[in-house]
Length: 423
Image 1: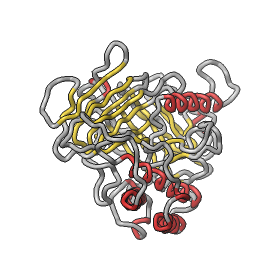
Image 2 (image 1 turned 90 degrees about the horizontal axis):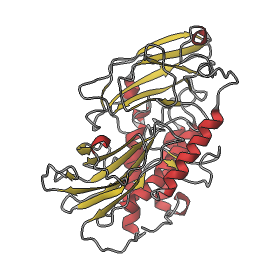
Image 3 (image 1 turned 180 degrees about the vertical axis):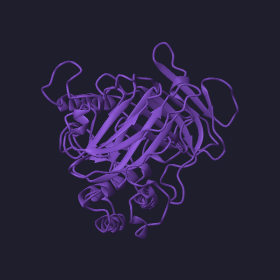
Image 4 (image 1 turned 60 degrees about the horizontal axis):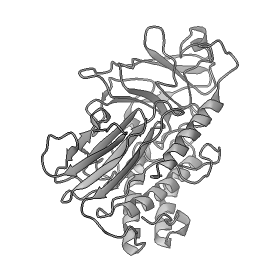
């Protein structure tokens, strides 16, 4: 594939006009202030525009090319405070998402090096999340990380085909398969390395290039309009500006529900979404059970349905980052100011937003129990030793929150991903 693709600012006038129209939608969103900022919305629109251009370049099924859907896009130093992130939906800070289009009438080979991420899963879909605004892409086949046929040298190869097979290295594609998504989940940012994954069509010898023509920009425009319309539906009150859809915007504040299997997700993956509301003099405490999951994490999001800053701010925690309670549970504290406990989730100044919890790689037959939620006065979580106890208490170091290690760990993870050559 051509390595240099046009930026939004290098795009034709018609495409830029569509982007500007959605910028106006972002400026008029009713939740600006408490649940999001205008600047983040406009950055989000530009990120989706960049994603749509890359998606249009990667949707040739004869020359499949895995494209990263979110992450750092425009800085040599990925941990720099000025690095620009592309966000797509409530992107998981611990995940790298790679997607490309497929034609189920042809066979493909997915191959590469497993790496050391907590999980690397393959999933077939009936679309690419940007084909339409009335529904999300649905699952058409799954190869979970624990069943990936990894050889002793760390490599793997999987055949995608319409032919039915019980072989461990074959994933059967239904006739309506249109895309594959590769999810890599990091539990430990500093010590896990991304795998290198490739998709090739069997028997293909087409030149590896992209035609930037009128048809290309037509596809990019459609992808942009559909993606923005889908994700904006999750913002409270935005249904008056874009097509309506059900979503977590209808959930009451500070209430939890029973985790459920993620729609279109893996059989052993559960998730729970909620909305938080917290005043300056309050803390919201959520207590969960990891339930033996290979990967367990919680994050906050704004009403654009995007992740909050998670490199220089602690707006997400996973099993390698949070501290468990003596009884095996995990409690986190959501607040605007640092409460002094280890498991703090920083709202980044917002008074409202989303909470999303994920359980992946659960033991067979195990389903996570419903978390609990409690709103307490500011300072009470530290007094009651909730949220994993005081910062640094596990090793006796009370010098304060170590954000430098978080930033360094993310930089190491990102550089490893770039060396894998799919960014």
